[in-house]
Image (cartoon, rainbow, N blue to C red; front, top):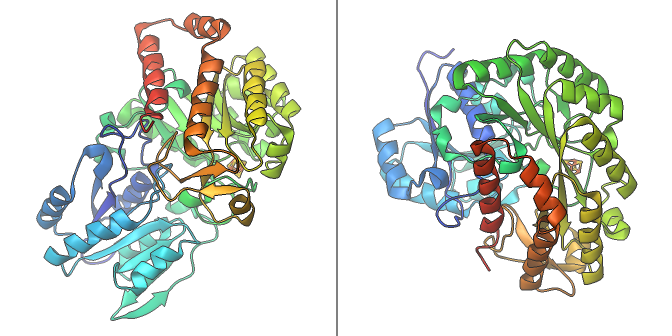
Length: 467
Ligand code: SF4
């Protein structure tokens, strides 16, 4: 450890807000994990989640003047809150006037984020760190040497660059420092848990699949898919149970269950927990068979979210998802039999979309009848020649139907308003069926279930406030 204690502040920059709050406000697991690494490395760490806490630039500046940090890391690519970097640059510009000796930069930048590099070259930032940033934070906090993995640094006008990590080093990933956050400000997705408190964690990083609409590379941008040791996962769960009384875990892995042996080992370990835990995950429907799903259920899995994307085979095939609709039907039927809730995610307005194909998607959703369905507008996260020729990428981050991430994509033959109307129609046709209303009503066992379902309705309606 270095002789002097480092003081750092991690800031999640202001995001676009709807009615003053992001709903749902996903727990900022990237920032919390980096804070955990810094704490373990002996640093003094402070965090500010501006949008969720309602802090403005003046508030942040006041706090920084009081804390007197050595450096400030901004995280505009927090989990499911990918944002343009301009709000970060605006904040840095103002803070630097009062705090000229503090280094300001971005952490966890996606590997392709040229604009982050440009901001360093232009002198708008002192540094940017590309890829998963635990190794960098650990290095700076322990040795105070600014040479860590993924660092892009400007020193006296000269740029120095260090290669990003290819694969996360799980030894460096510590339990997220959730104690630094006001956890009451975060709202997990209402349909994805039954017992609160709920906190997220990762059992793996990155994803070996290549669906062309998917932003998973943005928030954990190291290239290689990597599985976390089972012992570490269990240790973290036990710590979260002890420190925060968690009763449910949301695995935020882009694709949970990529390797069967890892899932089986994890299930065995979870079954042995002294205090059982309920959990949910995101996955693909083609990774599972009935026996494996039974293991998941016995180990506490209560819900799986998966992407169907489109009910039209042609639209689906173009995404390179590589899943057949029949596989999804089989998966949902197994889950229903076993007692695992299913959350099917659909995208409305992918390239090649037509009104008839959207109707096909809605009809497929109704026929599939997962426990819950969610419908999103297609989002542009990357430049795709294909997408550009088959539609238009909106320039506005505010045109959103789901969360605040990505730029809205409007396929040829549609307007933005029409896409939003189709989304409303999809929700209404799926949830407005007497069968569905009855099914959801039958799941109500306690007042907490009514509150949770009420939150779900509020979350869906919040998607449409831009109308
Ligand atoms: S499998 Fe899921 S996480 Fe992986 S690329 Fe496809 S959509 Fe993204």
